[in-house]
Structures are given as structure tokens and as C-alpha cells.
Image: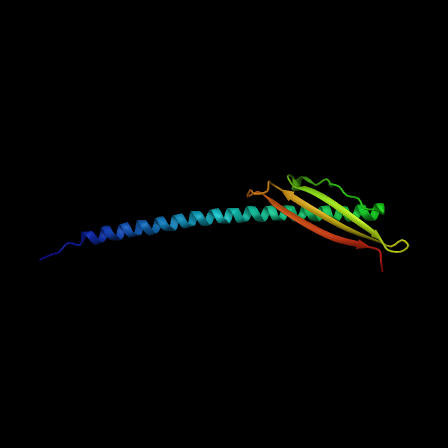
Length: 129
């Protein structure tokens, strides 16, 4: 007597389709995570350079003017959509000695969304030896 095993082939085919479907779904999810990570990295770099540019602008303005200057520097086209605000506080110590405490905050996007990023940088500038 010869027995047929056609059920085993069907079972193997269904198993392979299920495994391939699971691999496809996991690859799709991994692709979405990678895309979100790359987007966040670009946003983080943009606000970092925006905050750094604002900090350098604030230092230059304070040293050139000899007093605190706060405001919003103009940024180049590479940082479109990034808003920067610079703050400054000063104190004097003796005759002609000063300390400037400068902060720069860069923001892009709307808080609570995937496209939101914020960076704050601080620097202290002084002529005290």
C-alpha cells in the first residue's frame, strides 16, 4: 500500500507564507523607525547649529558693543524654519571688569509633534584675568 503525503506540502506552504508575511511586516516597521530616527537626527542637528550660531552672535554683539545685546539673529537659508532667541545678563566687578552670561535657544516645529526639536546653549564671557 502506498500512502500519499499531499497534506505535508500544503502545511509547509502555509508555514512559509506566514513566515514571509511576518518578515515583511517587521521590515516595514523597522523602515518606519529608521525614517523617524533619521528625521529626528536632522532636526537635532539643525537646532544645534541654530543655537550655536545664536550663541556666537550674542558673544560677538556683547564684546563689540561692550554691553549686553539680546535679540534674534538672522540665520542663513540652511536653517529655514529654526527660530533662535538670544538672551544676555551682565555684571561688573571692579573698575572695567565685566562678565556676560549669554544664552541661546533654538526651536523648530510645534511642541508635541514629531517635527519638534529644541536646543539651549550657554556661555560666559569675561575680561577678568
